[in-house]
Image (cartoon, rainbow, N blue to C red):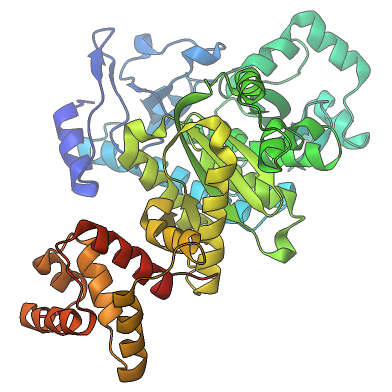
Length: 508
């Protein structure tokens, strides 16, 4: 089987314009491996080995850090037990090879979309496992941190080891002697510390399992297991096990919080800041360092999602939302009243990726996501939360609550108008122009506000208001006639902008 990386790259480009070859090596001589080429391939998949000779087949890796996938022909497939793999026909040409790789990853993508829809709909654990079973036809389990089984797909009971069978017969509880054996052999620690899904081969189990520890903010909340019944785990199945464990982490944490096992997850210093109970910067800095290792003065952003009244007690939905928003960024999530709050540290360094991530979250969650302005002092968190809250309320009042990303920076004029209303008196020019609009059904206030906001650039203003330049010029002439305002005076312009904002945008 001849493999041309350049050809693979060219074929991938035909499917995805921004695809790229990350890395390529030849080691040993006849084994070629290529990094993730595009989002059509699992983003965390690492590398795929292309094995063309029996002598090139590597031994199964029990160490999670050594996990890999390999592409083998049908002839060599039986010799690769325990190795996650993609099997292609013997004597496959390069086009067949490429199509097999794409089809395998399309299975992963379809599974990912299916599970994501169920998570957003707050489906129970068992529904998630059942849906995954359509893509991974082998026994699967979800257990909590105390090894109590939560969900399972058992298929044929005689294919499950005696250990797991015992759990099914005893309300999901793990037998004491098995827990002791796990501790004695070191497998308990090993499974708990795995960074990703990995094959476990132990004297405790009668057959091999694929294990994935589930953690939230560094705390172990449960496990996801897949039984390697036939010793022929596919590459896609290993990737699904890895991703599934990550996706259900927020639900596992929510389950523990709901049952009182993780009260500290909800009762934390962020809640005290937002409630005004913790205000001293020194105390906030101390708590922040303990929980997040962030300095109190740095680069922060906050994203918030609000829930309807009937979703207020839906902890699983809250946790799923926060888990999705956090993504792979340096972030921490909290549930506060009817709002999911996620705080990001130094996310602005990759601004396009960051904002694109939040846009995808808004679309997947089918609800608006509000992102705060950047702020440098964590002790000001409550102020920026109030601004986010203002935007949420303003959207609801204006019937703008469609699923989209909204930045507080774009709402500054409305926020300024609300802050100034009742504190700063409006100027004469704004008052008479607003009265004229009300009497004559014109839009001079809107025109002047846009003109001032765009720094009196007539071309940009006409484009923003969908007006011909001559129409805009006539409007500005009429506005000057009505108000008698000198727009070359910077103080008059500032007062006029604030006044118009109070009249047009203020909602209080």
